[in-house]
Image (cartoon, rainbow, N blue to C red; front, side, top):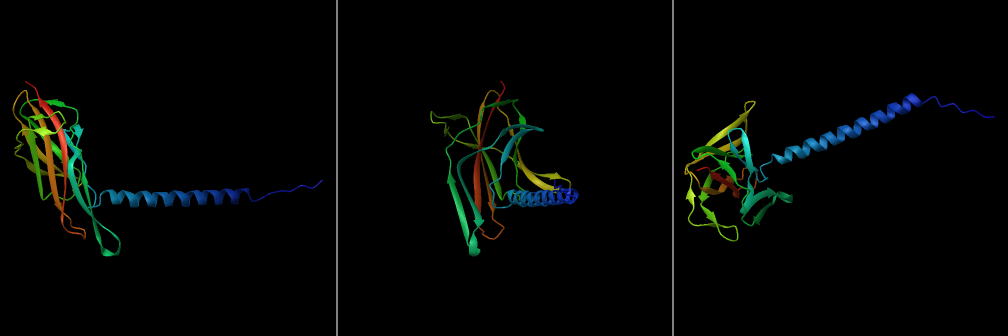
Length: 192
């Protein structure tokens, strides 16, 4: 009878643990690299409508966006997209409420406007004349660093729908130049 004894079990486990550690470190590196790209200038920022600390609704991309990014060989490409106009479900707020569109982008917008419509037509498109709301831009700071911008405004008239369309513009500062822009929609109704 022949007996075989394997004495390398410990070194086999060490090899497995070393390989697993290498895989985990590699995945972590990939995740960190892709996370950094999310904050890159060449991404259309997300927006959120807020009242105080409460998030009411995410902004929907509407109308159009135009964004630049670097391509190979020092060339640039522009991604221009047309969207259908639509509005989120209504959130009710008090007349005179101070609201804010949080723009999740470190770079300050060169311009940011908020237009209010009273109604939409049968296709869901804003109807009537838009009224440009007075707004201020405030920096959002966490741990001493700018993380976003707030466009602060008020909705004053009681018992009214506010179909809001915001428009933001940024000059590309990472190699391509040119105007980058997008539109976002929101919908609130003031209580009577």
